[in-house]
Image (tube, rainbow, N blue to C red; front, side, top):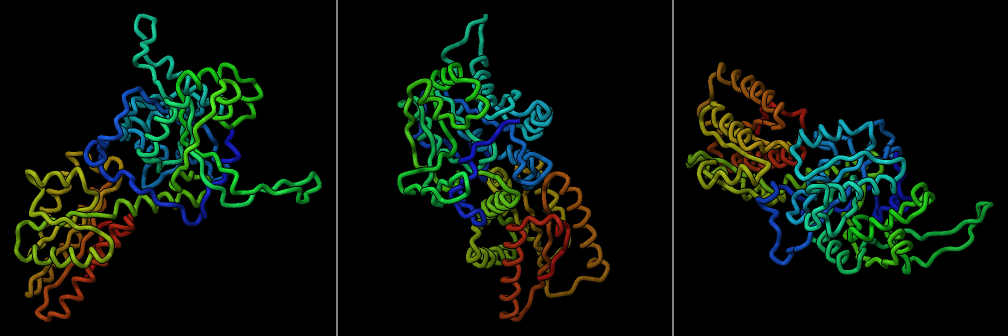
Length: 448
């Protein structure tokens, strides 16, 4: 298994409060996260993701890169972060030989593109070297490498840093092309001290003069390839810093770029929970309300839009998901169907069919909330009993497809004050369901 870098433990942050990414992809690549006009890259860029670590510091049997976050292996999120960048042409994932089949299955299951899996080495440098060599052998024609297809710049990034952003990748890629090498750095949070062999303080470093080396790092292909061709066995066995190899063996002095706090890596078990919290928070930023065209539903939707907006969730209102409105199926992760004065779940069934048709729940769990607005007249006892059973059955089947279905029952009231309290209650329940994405509440019919 590969060894990890000592400086990778210095996640310049309070581990209990990891930084949130400014733009984590909440929509499919090509729908929302299009490449900005001023971010054009006219040279081939490829990525090497070393993922051969054992993850001993998490205290888990499963290596952290394969640990599940919202039903998906962590490494899948990192791959997605690079896949959505249109100017990155290929991704090489380097894993230990015993995890090759698992990694291949992950790629197939989550339909990742542009990804090649290669076996890693016993140390970090050996694994990265294998990835670089794989890039050099990727494209051949009649035994000759197609120079136009070979990566001009290689970005190396940790598989357990899933929140890397395109803007920063662009800075790394452009600086690497110009300087030969570039790397992310972050300010030191704690003072670094040196100790004597007896365990006493020797001296401390002036923190302002030093930086923590982070990922991603970028190199021209020739620089990183030559560095690995020229480095020693000792470097392969004990070294961890790619920028140092480029300087020592190629004379390439890397451009250092201050990185955002979102570059933190999953190191400990608690970091997995933090990563899941970040993803949930991002997925809960917006939702779509479907009214079916009912005037009562529209009135309720307007009231919910105001109430939920105060709870930091943006709501769009639409009568249906047909025609131009079908865009929401590709853009949103949360749907609220308002049904008026009947207990039929056909409208929810239609949403589930539409979501399945576009394969929306492949990468993230989708939330569908059925808000059933009862009329002033009470439902019969038999219909009251039928509704909870029906939504449980529907939700159980949907859960297998990574769609989380919940129900909220709201009774109309002639008392204005009581009605406003009920609407606020629906907004609070809705926000909580969207934010928490709790499997335990799937199929429940909650009362507002």
